[in-house]
Length: 245
Image (cartoon, rainbow, N blue to C red; front, side):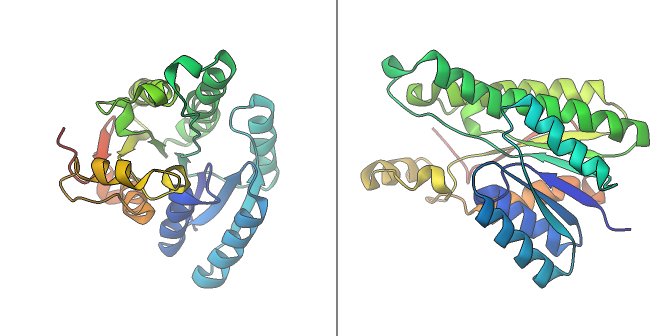
């Protein structure tokens, strides 16, 4: 019986790359999206055609509890058992610190932290009852030691996700492996608008002198879902090319 992974924010970037890696290893895929319906649909069609697995796309704004619950109800109605949850969906609202407002800060926290909490609570309960499952959170090196005041809301949300990872691991022991991956700079839509001079400066802080490709992050996420990683639990794994400042 094929396993199923639910990946939030999976229509593009790290999420889409993660869906491809899991599909290439025989997983059925649930692609969660919020606004990028056509990209999610096309991704699922491509995955089914190339890897001969089942892929479905489901809309839910991860910052909205009701939409999460509706998505989970659809999954239950399809009699799908989720074996792995990847909390990947995330947003940023970069701006000068003095220009940040309450609403943007709250929206970032709801998407990057509160949504993963609710999904993990609901799906984790089912996994715990089956005495098996994997939850992998996508946080950031911004949660650990690469701080940017213009990203204070994003950094705080990802730091909260690190803490949530540890608490979930304790809560759902010994049956669920719960870990997080902390990428550094990665070539996704979030970095497309970076000034070239600034990008070059940031690359100079990385020992490999380049940003990661999404698949390089996805490979680590997938590894944490495998049997080879079954004794890895409650860990935050950096994937940043060797940040040294």
